Length: 477
Ligand SMILES: Cc1ncc(COP(=O)(O)O)c(C=O)c1O
Image 1 (cartoon, rainbow, N blue to C red):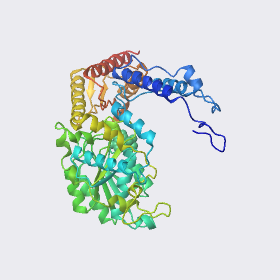
Image 2: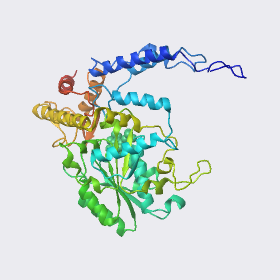
Image 3: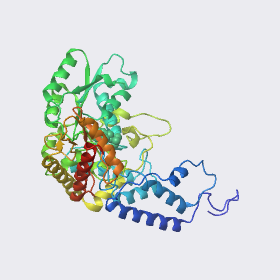
Image 4: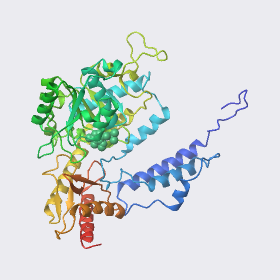
């Protein structure tokens, strides 16, 4: 910066960029190499890191290279979902091409709320590509921070269609209801709370033996509510439940929605990318009939967080739900700022990382990687079935979640307590990271495979570690 009338010659935030970049790239390269294979264990948070993370606000900096080294220590002592043996919750992978695009996007720091020229075109193109990828006829959509915000956005669009005046006068006397399977993600209830519908008005539709929404029960519930003067706003079908990966029968649910004129949203935060594969496509029959669908590219599209995708079928439905006039964002000649179709105002260029990844590798590479995860889940299910001490808690994994538990020989042992302990012991052991869950009150391990780095040998280690610790715990270890 040239000297100015205030005497400034350089920004207080300037630094040796070449040095910083070289150092940052080295750390990034080492990180990628380190993620390729599993670590022998998860290192605990060291004393040095704890002390660092208790330091007060620094008045003077340590320099970019040292700060990056410190950040790298923090990351190395954190639980990283990108590692090949991370099987917890619904993970992600930090795909390298997308990481680089994200760094570029952050540097330009485009705001997708207002005019952004090419960035908006790229966002729209990526929405079209995702519609194509999962065979959903999207006319509009939005990138969000993830499944929670996608569900909230979709339910706001549904509420606006069912009860347009609610945006102005609130919901008093309107008695809205929402329907979702008993195993839908808690974000559906949270969205209903935020939208004033109320969690008590989210009907938990019973599930069948494959843990899918029972369509007969859905019909009965809606009928009873309509008779009772309630106002059904939306049905949320789950395409890949978080607990077991069950996919609700979307086409038949759509039939009920159509009979009652109710909005159908498909929450595919976890499972919807599998609709792109030959192997799992049959599970998603009728997807094109939904009013809106969502998926998280930061789950099974391997992109770093956060990259939620919401697609809607009807043009104008997001605009109807979110449009405001303001004197500081003038719109002329029919132009609408992108912010008029989203819940968020300032919005990062989230789509660029997905766009870059799709351009880099092509859609087929993603289909293949997802298919491989599905195959690994089938292998895991086979290994579990074949082991006398392991029990699979679903008839067959529909997607890539394989809940199973250790069953001790000694029938007097509390199986639930043992399996909760098993998950904790395996996490402390560090060879694999797996979380616990309960299926019909039965505690279990709930591995979910959504990582392009995971291979069959990682599945072997998961099974071996579960059996090893299960046996030790059974014998009092
Ligand atoms: C089915 C489903 N819906 C919604 C969510 C919430 O997604 P996010 O954490 O991206 O907000 C999840 C998270 O795992 C999920 O599995």
